[in-house]
Structure formats: structure tokens, C-alpha cells
Length: 250
Image 1 (cartoon, rainbow, N blue to C red):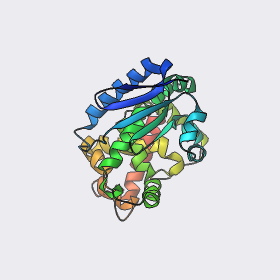
Image 2 (tube, helix red, strand yellow):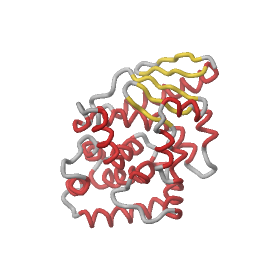
Image 3 (cartoon, rainbow, N blue to C red):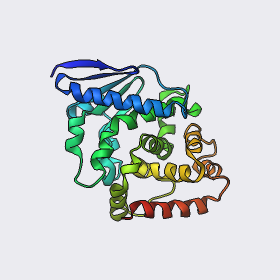
Image 4 (spheres, rainbow, N blue to C red):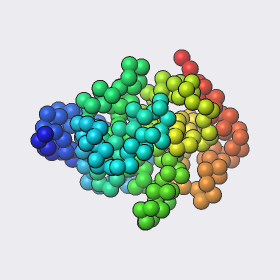
């Protein structure tokens, strides 16, 4: 495999020489996502390099924690865990691998095509979240895991992936038990974005952006009560479960 580099105005990509065309499309899509996020998140991370991997094995070598992440994710969402982001790099499966990874249900291919956008958006959100800055690595990791439903959900919603997730959400509700509210670590990938979707529908995109750039010191219950205008957590949970049922419907 011959690694080469492609560039755009704001990004670099490292990839196999045979993936040059796909790499250009990934960079172009990231420029569009970056433009959409600029007004909502004014501090974009600098000098992001996207590394496109031609196999799952190659991707796993860059982050030994990935197998644990896959195992901790609900089966309906595991195929959509396609990379990771940290520092100045985003590691993700190459587009050809993502296309092969897609299922036959509507929305699967579209969700996977947005994998790089999801990972970049998560980096943008982390860069703009004041409560994640200046922390030791271990403390930051624990905090990110605790708030994964918010950080991962916002990344998938703002990147556009949640809009294609109806069949995957329906599968999750059929196959698993009743999801918790807010979604636990197992459901953050697939259902976290539905919380952001509900907030955006009720209070606007700006409110959703503000919500994911702070971590309430008193935890998720207080954060959700404040974000939804003081409405009780029980009432917001009922609204969310109704929203989930609508999203999973035909």
C-alpha cells in the first residue's frame, strides 16, 4: 500500500494512492460541514488530518480501545462506529470499506458515508466545550464517557447522520430492552442524536448547540431540565419516548 496525501483549504487526508478520488470527496464534504458549523461553534479545531484506512485491522492498530467500543455499543449501531478522533487526527475507514459495510436497509449507506463528518463534528464540539478543556487525559476521558449520549449524539445530529437513522432506531427498539433516558453508553451512538433532535425541534438549533458546549456540574438530569426550559425530567422523558416512537415508525 502506497500512502499519499491530499489537501483542501482546511484539511489534509492520508490515504492509499488508489483512494485518491474518494479522499477528495471526503475532503470536499468536510469543507461543507465545516462551513455549516462555523456559526454555531466559533472555535474550529486547527490542522485536522483525516486518515483513511482500507481495513478494520488497520484502523484498530491506531486505537486498541476500538474493539471495546464496538462491544459496548448496541448491535443495531455497531456498524456505524467506523473510526475515532483525537488531537489533530481523525481515523476512519475508507469510503470503499464503508460502502461494503453498509446493510441493505434504507439509510445505512448514507449514515456510513457521513462517518468522517461525524468524527470531525465531535472534535469541533469538544473544542468548543469549555468543560472539556485543560483536563488531564484520564479525567477528560471519564467525563466524555459520562456525557457520551450528549457529545456523541450532538456529533451525529449536527453532521446529519441522525436524519438517516430511522431503520436503525427501529431495529434497536425491536431488539433491545427499553432504553434509558438519557441514553446510556450502549445507545449513545444511535439514540443520543434523538435527544438533540427533540431539543432542536422544540427550542431551535442554537439551543442544541449551546446545550452540547457545556456540561452541567450537577449532571444530566439538571442539564436536561435546564435545556428544555425548566420542564420536568419526567415530562421530557415522555416527550422523548413519543419522539422515538415517531422516528421508528414507517
